[in-house]
Structures are given as structure tokens and as C-alpha cells.
Length: 232
Image (cartoon, rainbow, N blue to C red; front, side):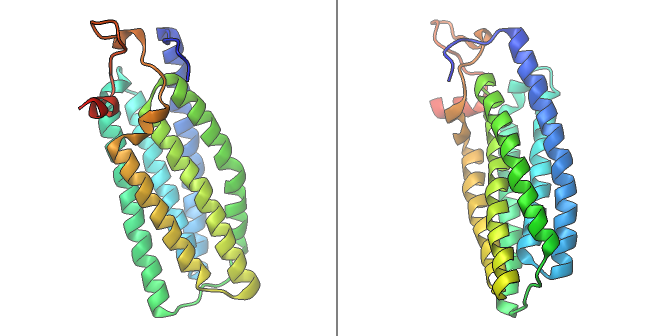
């Protein structure tokens, strides 16, 4: 974390970078979600369908970021943006738990899905690159929303690994129970991240605020709702 305060020009550059990263995330995850749900429906795979829904949650998270950084003063929308991202995590978890429980109780077997395995492997390559770029940008910019969005993308990386393991176990040994169990792991992580986003706990990695956020006593001020919550 840098101790230097950002110049307005540098903040503008980082805000534009955050916006373009959000566009890239939304585009990739839209395609990923469509492919995952189609493959999941074809293979009766709860984990693949859950992964596809997570991709759409990632799109919604990116859309929140786009909405925030298209504002004249993005910090004014920080608290609401974090709450919206947190709500998207909870919606994902609720659906995945329902679908995985239905699959376990009904005893339905998921078919092997080569397409799903390839998709999960591709996401393991793409997602870490986006995470790294978002975290570097979010830390320097001091944005809790960008950091929360990077965590959303990191979650997608973890889910890709869990999904890949579940699909490979099912394809290699016919362990159909591995699919809904993998989906439940996805739901558990989503709940944890949703709580952290709702509480604004992603502020821990934020950099100091710009000079405009300096309080009257010379100490760093607080322009985002996340930090306001911590002071309360």
C-alpha cells in the first residue's frame, strides 16, 4: 500500500482502467455463462449450471462497477455498489444450494461434459489475469468496490478449480455425487464473500484517499461509505 496521495490525473487514469477491466470481465463472463449453462443443461450438471449462474453474477458485479465509475464522483456510489455486489453473491448461493440439493435428493446422475471441462480449464487461465489487474488498480485507487469486484473474480477462479475437479471425477470414475457437492462448495464461498462485500470488509487493501479526502485536522479523510462504516 502506497503512502503517497494520488494526483487527480492519476486517479482519472485508474478510474478509466477500472472501467475497461469491468467491460472485459462482463464480456468474457457473458460468453462463459451461456456456454456453461448450455453444457450443464445437456449434461444435467448442477455444478456447471451453478458455475454459469456465477458467471452472470460476475457480469452483474462488473455492471455495478461500470455504473459506479461512469459517475462524475465514483466515491459517492461506493457504499451502494458494495451492497449490490454483496446481494448478487447471496442470490447466487441461494440458487446453487436449491439446485444442488434437488440433484442430491433426486439421485439424478450428471453426464460427463468435455465442454465443461474445457471451459473450467480456460477460466483458470483467464480469471487470475483479471484478478491481478483489478487488485493492483483497486489498491492504488483506494476503491473498496474494485477490490470487492476483484474478489468476485477470484471466487470465479476458485470455482473453476472446484468445477474442474468435480467434472473430472465424474467423467473418470462416474462419481456423480461429486458434481452437486462441488456446487455446494461454490455456494458456501459465495455466502462468505457476500457477507464481506455487504459489510465493506474489502476496504482492508485500499490505499489512502486523495488530497480531496483530507480532513480538517490534516488526517486522511474518508470519501467512501466502506470507511465510514468502519469509523462508526
